[in-house]
Image (cartoon, rainbow, N blue to C red):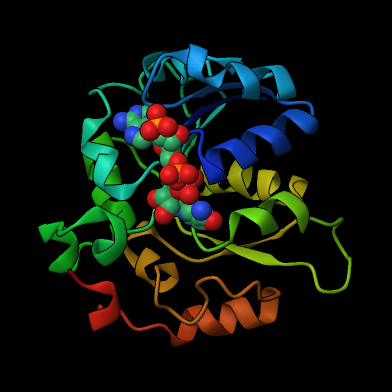
Length: 219
Ligand SMILES: NC(=O)c1ccc[n+]([C@@H]2O[C@H](COP(=O)([O-])OP(=O)(O)OC[C@H]3O[C@@H](n4cnc5c(N)ncnc54)[C@H](OP(=O)(O)O)[C@@H]3O)[C@@H](O)[C@H]2O)c1
């Protein structure tokens, strides 16, 4: 697939490494001149581009940047992707450590719904709860004992199939976590977040989640 990645940090860089190794054609961007990604491009064979060009002709786009930077993305930044190409976002709201106060999220808007509203496109929430080193190193073939499951929240069944297939290809069991409106079930502070559970425990943890923000995850 042609995959555009906006954000080239721990998660965007890891996905660039993993997805190019699987044979995908990756265009990757950060917030600066593509020259700043020359090393990552040379290492992986990905093409470093300006963020405005990352989605061009893509079959799938991944947005992986700090939550607070989402409003900085240019309007229409995803418009050049192929029709129907799903958009994954991996972001988490870290009000106390990084993002400051985002009023809408504090008052109950799920983190990914806020991102989706700003981007003006439907998104799939996935990869938000796995530590980047585990995303890099812990993918294993389907059927392997102890395979980590990753919840995927999103609204469109066709897009979810594409995203699920990619998660599986990366070495993780995809779990349907329901619609984006319920993506709070996998936000920071929930039972599933950061846990590396298998399928059964992931489903159980998603069901046990509650939507209110705890003090630890509030501004
Ligand atoms: N680290 C983890 O293990 C982990 C796990 C799951 C989810 N997450 C979440 O995934 C997101 C990314 O995390 P990370 O750890 O990869 O962050 P990171 O290492 O700080 O990298 C952030 C990346 O986003 C880029 N960026 C920032 N603003 C941008 C903009 N306006 N346009 C284009 N690119 C922009 C940065 O580019 P510059 O270098 O040019 O600033 C950088 O490449 C966060 O929301 C985080 O909470 C992280």
